[in-house]
Image 1 (cartoon, helix red, strand yellow):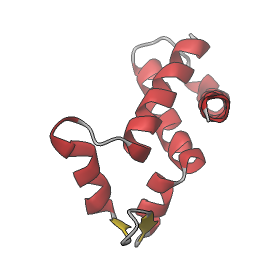
Image 2 (tube, rainbow, N blue to C red):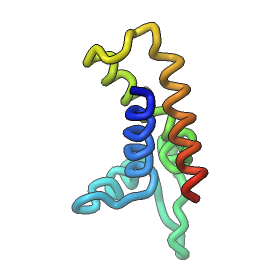
Image 3 (tube, one colour):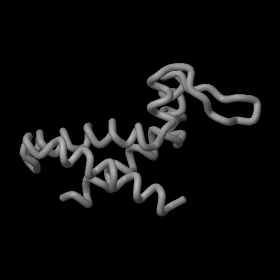
Image 4 (tube, rainbow, N blue to C red):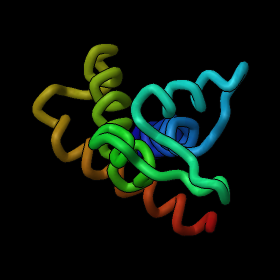
Length: 101
């Protein structure tokens, strides 16, 4: 279960953090959240939400909350396990990201 949650978290975090998505849906979402690009196409944040999206580590925590809450709602995890799983799932996604780059 933990490995599945880690992989799902890494994928969702990667999508939100840097991928365009179908029809540029995710790029448009990032723009609505305050992500802008300079003349060299480097992303920068204009809001706190945008900062959280551009930072893989930060975004990983938010996505880990979503993923583990879904696991609780589907009765794959117990609610009292949520805080530890959020941290473990986020850490796993960060480690995958660091190994990849």
